Length: 279
Image 1 (spheres, rainbow, N blue to C red):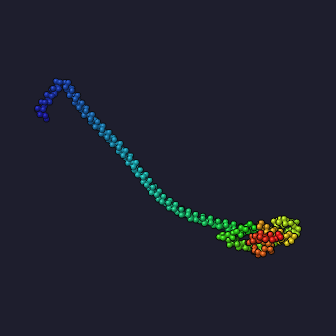
Image 2 (cartoon, rainbow, N blue to C red; image 1 turned 180 degrees about the vertical axis):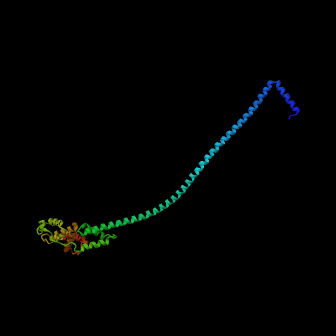
Image 3 (tube, rainbow, N blue to C red; image 1 turned 90 degrees about the vertical axis):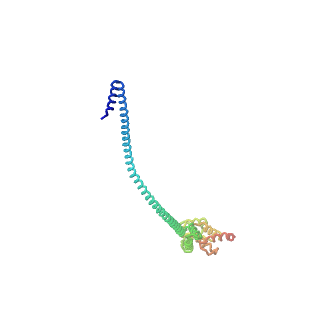
């Protein structure tokens, strides 16, 4: 309860406002302005609080989304790390496989090299066998190749070639059969040297020695002519049997007592002695 003095002051103040209406109105307006300002500040503060709350809500939502993405990324990162580790192991395994493959490749290359050498050896043996077979079948060119191999030091087939050549030269491989003079309509007693040469080229290997022996017996030709024919045969014939027969007949004069491994000796002898037979 206000004191008497306070009530008296209020009454006087009210009486003052009653006498002065405009002042009363001013006071009311002023009071309203004060209240309005106070209310505006309150509204601003309230709006600020609402905005802060909304922003905080938004930030919280974003943080939640970020957290969710981080959680998801954690799984992805874990997968990447796991894949990286697996890739590392696979790379290590691949390196081991590569090293093993390199070793196998080296072994394979060695096998291939050995196979090539074996193939080369087989090819060489096959080629040599062809030469021996051809020389044994009256091929003069093959026989000369055989002699070259027999004289080639360091050749893998040197010894075999020498034995094969000796067998061809010393053995009575080529049997002598009478030449079919009647078949060719030729009489050897009257045939010219050109005819003898033609018949020699046409008859079989086993008939060639008879052609040369028949020529050697033709005294109607000079010894020089007959020896020249034989020497030319030694140099040019493609028949081993003719070569063998020519050397054998020339030895009647040369006295070398050599087989066809040294047929060059008969040619050289003739080059040295031919002038003596021209007399």
